Image (cartoon, rainbow, N blue to C red; front, side, top):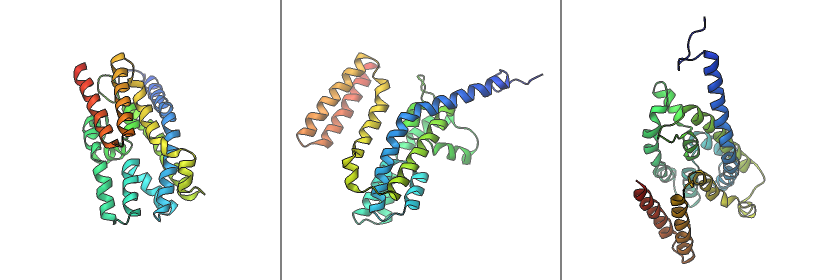
Amino acid sequence: MNAAGPAGGPPNHNRAARRAAYTTGARAALPFTVAIFAFGISFGVLAKGAGFSALAAGTMSGLVFVGSSQFAAVSVIINGGGWAAAAVAGTLLNLRYLVMGFAILPALRGGRARRAVESQLVIEESWAIASEADGRFDRVRLLSSGAVLWLGWVAGTALGAAGPFSAVDIHRYGLDAVSPVLFFLLLAPHLDTRRRQTAAGAAVVCALALTGLGAPDSAIALACLIALVWTWRAR
């Protein structure tokens, strides 16, 4: 007689369900992985300009796995800052993961060491893929999507740092536009109601207008304010 699985069903059924969930997470990550791979090339080129070897740049991407903080840290070094200042800049940009970590903690398993390893795969994209409508997170989708995204980021970094690319190529091939594309891919699935579409449209119009007037920082603040107001009104 076969013993029941963790969810009360046959072991074969549970294994099939887990495999299906891993496949779903990996497939959902593929569009983001293409963009992250290109973004990784940009970081690799920047790191090479800062004096990083391909091994050092790839190792940094594998251990940190957060594009914004890595760009900030390397930019500090390029502009003459020390390692301490670079570490502070990267850490400040990573503070948002404290909040994300508290939210996703119930989905992780095992002791502290295992949870630390699994949480390494938590970035905005894997977070969005793993999120459920009720506010919970699917651990299998988190791990499978995060692993695919991690491979794309590290591979892109290594190619940018070791390949023949230069800073000019980043603009020539439009790699500097990858970051906005990533956030659009994250936002697009949530624009499923007229209210959300209207909020997003208003934010875009205001942001473009203020950017055109030379106030990009104000554009970001106003776009966030519009999102907060629409979210509050929808409650």
